[in-house]
Structure formats: structure tokens, C-alpha cells
Length: 133
Picture 1 (tube, rainbow, N blue to C red):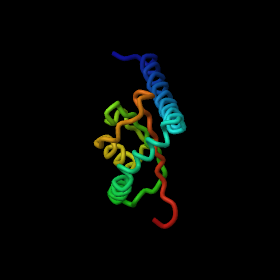
Picture 2 (picture 1 turned 60 degrees about the horizontal axis):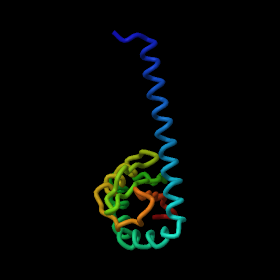
Picture 3 (picture 1 turned 90 degrees about the horizontal axis):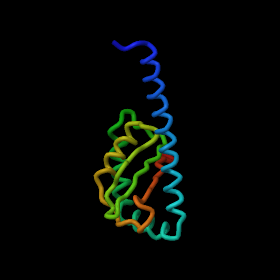
Picture 4 (picture 1 turned 90 degrees about the vertical axis):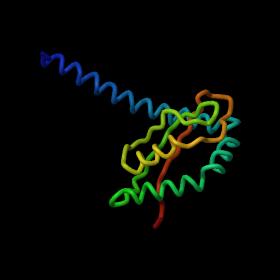
């Protein structure tokens, strides 16, 4: 039988875990920004977007069309790449349907081989729609 104090402890543990998850996301965004600003960052970003730029736009349009009404709320996607360009730990905030759809898309792709460090290689992408698109 579970007592009220035990339930309170469990609730506190879940709240703490959720707070750390947000901290982890922010830390991952910061790590990705640092990697992008490093000497190898611009060259990798160019190769990355050359490979997936059009596909990303197409996937975003598909994900957007799958929500009713289309939700153009901005969101951020973070992921880490292993040495072969395979995505790991794909996450989004906020966790809206369009963002969750894009996370699934990115989780299934292979990206250009990232620079040697850091390992895994962090990336972040901010999605937002401007204008009448």
C-alpha cells in the first residue's frame, strides 16, 4: 500500500526530472551553438544543409499539413550525431505535433559525417515560419 508521503516523494522526483530535462535541452542547444561557432562548424553546416535543405523544407510542409489547423508555432530541434552521421537523442521543444513529426523525420535520416569533435556532434535547428508561407 502506498502512503501519501511516498506519493509526495514520487511527485517531487518526477517534477525534478522534468526540470532537469528542460535544463538538459537548453544545455544541448548551447553545446550545438558552440560547435557551430567552432572552426569546423561553418564548413560542416554548409555540407549539412547542402544535403538536407530541400528535404527539410519538404518534410516540414508535410508535417505542417498533417496538423489541423496547421500549427506554425516556432520550435527548436536538437540532435547528436555519431561519427557516421547517424542521429541520436533527437528532441524538440515545445513538443507540439509539427515538432514531434519533424523529430521523427530527423531520427530516420543519415547526415554527413560530422567533424571529429565533439563526440557525439551536437546540432540544433530553429524552425519558424515568417511571412505568408
